[in-house]
Length: 89
Image 1 (spheres, one colour):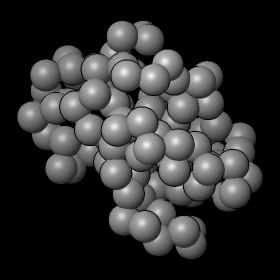
Image 2 (cartoon, helix red, strand yellow):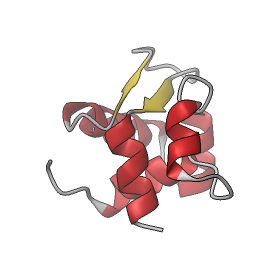
Image 3 (cartoon, one colour):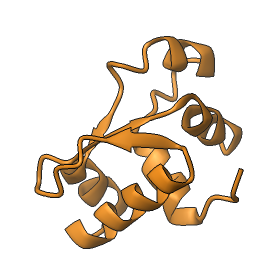
Image 4 (cartoon, helix red, strand yellow):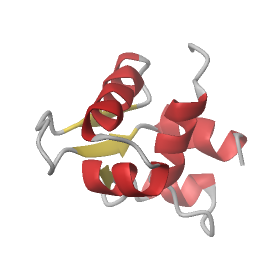
C-alpha cells in the first residue's frame, strides 16, 4: 500500500463515523460516503483539490467514486480506506 498524504487522510476522515468501529463501517460501507461538497466544506478545499484527492485515493485502492466530477461527485471508501482512516485516529 502506498503511504497516504495528509490530504488523503483528511478526505477519508470525512467519510467515517468516529463513533463506530472500523468493522461496523466496513459492514455498512455501501451506505457511508462523502460527496465533493462535504469534502470541500469540511477540508476547506476547492472543487479541483477535492477531485484530485479523490482520484489519488482511487489510484491507491482506498475507494471508488461515481466518476461525476461535478458537484455531485461521491466517494465510497474501500475496506483499505476505512482501515487507513481508523489507524490514523
